[in-house]
Length: 562
Image 1 (cartoon, one colour):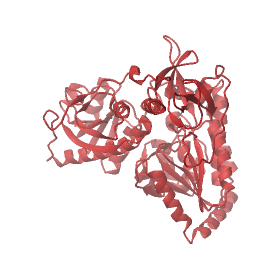
Image 2 (cartoon, one colour):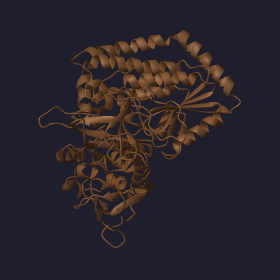
Image 3 (cartoon, one colour):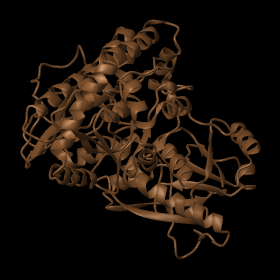
Image 4 (cartoon, one colour):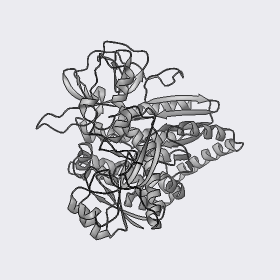
């Protein structure tokens, strides 16, 4: 069918649903709901058989939903109404929730139900839940609803009746998120932080100023005066609670009236100049199983398998992140393993360079250059690993340089819910990370060029079909790390593994003789240097719009209805 997706932003769920519908043989197009007339024009131009709204901040125009079947994806169970459904699920400690696909109607979230799919609610941040369990349920619910609509036989279930209890939940305001550091337990603080980890953050007083706190992780050893910063680690701050402490990776200064737009930054960077003298606690690479603390990079070894896990907020990797991960990678290479799993955590694998850190830098061009070189150093280390098999395990999405980091490995394993964006065009970049070497050898030159030009999201299943990935892993977000570890242990037991490792070494020697990696890097970085250091290059405006959530940002780009 011709399906028009109407969304307020081309976010992760919109991309995932578009990719899934394409995989199922439909022809989806996108209209960004910036204004009612934009939606009307897209409907006239595309003439869809069905309209699906994966993510909307405003209602559809009445003349659109009254003339066309419009299916709204609501992240709540039947009867749930309101704009903050996942916030309330986390706040109330719900163990199970659901995604419901309902028909647009005059009353918000009250239309007839076309499909509903339940999901478990683990103790993770709202954005992680949205991309993970809720995302899985949303894709399944949309697929079921579209199938039912296409059949022409299904009658949707009304929400007005004894079978469905209406629960109207108001917008979840900052008053409900406020932390009382002297009274709230660590678990209560963590629940509040998790409910606002990406947006909108928890508004709080810190060092005499108003800040939004983003992200929260437990700490089982450090203690102090409730609310006080007691330590830092890898860019994060640790704040004491009445019965423990929590780690907060990112902060965003509250915008003053008429002041400049603010954006998230690593907490220590954001507090530069006003952070009190507190100890910098080393980030442990290897942790005992009983510890409850935060670190963004960890290593674990089980027999012949090494597992180098990393998880950075939003999947963005700053210069510091890349250098620390490279040091950890080199440590992993010093260990006597035959298989090394890179990644293997739930949620994002990597989205490449850290645009927020670049935007906040005194010289964004210089920081862009440092960041891309640090990414290249990491990717090159993976490409030059010839004494063991390296697996990139993607539990969640990857984009731009993050995809190319994965392609440097010998095998790429993707959880079924992951979405790959193997391109740089929406940020006005040519790209580096040795993509001109790894992408064509995976998918061929013509397809590589098309992936870069079209800049469309690729589902995990499509990635395997294209050759971008090697294995599709059917597992829940929570179960993916263990499943990837099991698969790696199985691989380590293969009789042919030693031969495969020897063969990859021979291929590296052959490829180096044909064209050295240094040549690929030089060519790519020549293009990137011109982009970074030319003041009028579109990259700078696109980066600024993306970071500051202004019109024209890359998160609002994507295919449009034609």
